[in-house]
Image (cartoon, rainbow, N blue to C red; front, top):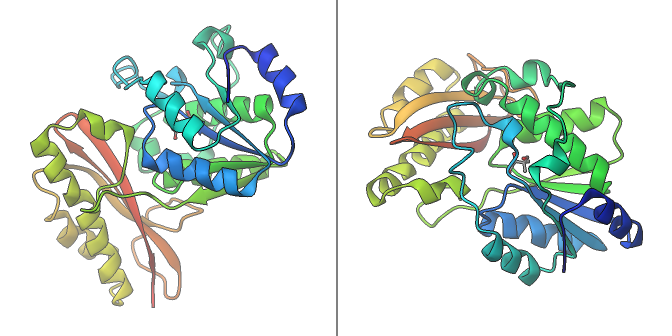
Length: 278
Ligand code: PAF
């Protein structure tokens, strides 16, 4: 496995990699969810490139950019164990030699839920993913279903900009109690970690109610939100996975996502559960 920090070095290596190239962008602090993305890329592509870059453009001024967990040696080992060929881990000055003035506006897809709670977040994600796609030029790129709104925005960006990349989504990896793996789970105290399960439980409750034929989403959410305490609710909602607009009524025979975000202490957790309405 080659570790590359500079863009010219990445360009030179990229030319020699057998295609198709699978790409797994990450911010590091890797866990079994990332390992699953790499394994999928390894099983489908001739070469696998991963990136580790904590992207300042996707963090708000009050968010956790400076304390975001960084664990390069452990990450390197995980990526090597899972057969990554190249790890691209650029300095901030290489990715952003100047403060970028060009903005990627994800439009309505980025305006609700995460987009409303974290203004500017998706513009920062779209910008860095677009840059990484230009640098790595993969044929396939692998993203976790846990960040479902991010996934929808990246799919749409790729389609709108006619990029020749297949966006592959991989199922959320969960702890045995149902908590979705996340690099931010490292912030949780033991009590917060125990409470974290309430988010996936609330989303499961919404999914079960919709699967059982309930259509009044407001009522379903009101009842499920009782499950969240002691977590502090940021939002619970139900969306079509490509649109991410809050629904008031569940349409019949439709694939939907129950989405949610909640705080365990200062740590913000997000998750989603898929449901098919009858
Ligand atoms: O999902 C993430 O880890 C990040 O948002 C991504 C896609 C690597 C962009 O920084």
